[in-house]
Image (cartoon, rainbow over all chains, first blue to last red; front, side, top):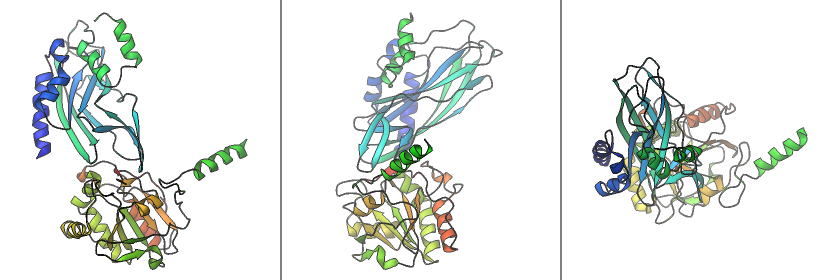
Amino acid sequence: MRTKIFLSLSAAIAALLGQGCCDRCARTEGRAEAAVTSEPSVARALLDRSHVTPGGSAELGVMIALASGWHTYADPPGDSGMAPILTLQLPTGITAGAKRLPPFRVFKDDAGTTHGYENHLLIRVPLTVDPDAESDDIMDIGITLDYLICKESCVPRSMESTLRIPIRRDPAPVTRQWRYALEQGGWHDSQDLQQREGEKL
Amino acid sequence: MKNAIRTVMTLALTLAWTANGAPEPRIGEPAPAFTASDSAGKTHSLADYAGKLVVLESINHECPFVKKHYSTGNMQKLQAQYAEKGVVWFSVASSAPGKPGHYTAELWQQKITETASKAAAVLLDTDGKVGRAYGAKTTPHMFVIGKDGTLLYRGAIDSDSSVDPKKVAGARNYVAAALDAALQDKPVETAETKPYGCSVKY
């Protein structure tokens, strides 16, 4: 029951914050999530730019937002817990690289040491677009994320979503929404963000 | 140089400690002795079961990894299958009072009925002594003790570390493999694996 509620909620949130969301509303995403759900976690998918170009590259992200006191796990998770399992259904013309997780926090208790995240976690996956991909087409990436969150007890969570990716001839810069997601999702010290901060967005 | 590396590796192995400061039990060495009461009020000591194969299964019904094995009937099936072959199976409940998965003896008796557990007993390890002595990190975390009292297997129940009940059937069960080998007096091929699950709520 809880899972069903969560799925419909996350679908609604994905619809609210997904494609076509302007940079301004992206800035309020954290508050929007907090406002519409009392769930311990919400996950949603996003792309680092408005569209991709044939032969170009981009990044797909999955942001997990966790309520206070909850944490989720790194890959590998340490002595207990579970690394997020991300499954992508890729259309012909897009290939994906290995998923990346940001630097983790170390949690220690009597049972051992685990590695994980609190508040927000942005999982990143590099995408490459085939040079022969047709402009003006739209490609759908199916995304399934299974992850475990724990406070005192642990609860498995699942997200299913489709990311619609337009293909255009003109290159698109990374969005402010993506930069914000990097900062929020644990990548604030990463070189990617430092470089991107130097770019004129 | 080789000797130096060997010394460092030996030291690293020696320095694996359990949460209570005792060294973790090693495969082929005597399993830590314990005495604990079960949910029916009976006391069990490991020494009582000399000459029998003993399984210890760290348990917490609030944990999704444990639920995976009980909702599919996988754990109960293993318990029943090996009880028939004379194996003594203890579920070890190490959740401390106030922590998830800590139940009174009465509630444990109910849980045993509800889940149709076929374990010989659920040991109420509320002070975590048994779990800590074995270095139990997760629920489930499995230990197989030989007829001579040495540790034959420690680690995961199987090869699928997800919470997905659909994957239980296709997973390689390490405990069944260890028990099958031990029942035929053969060495256990995979004697140690990385356990998976929720942390034990000591």
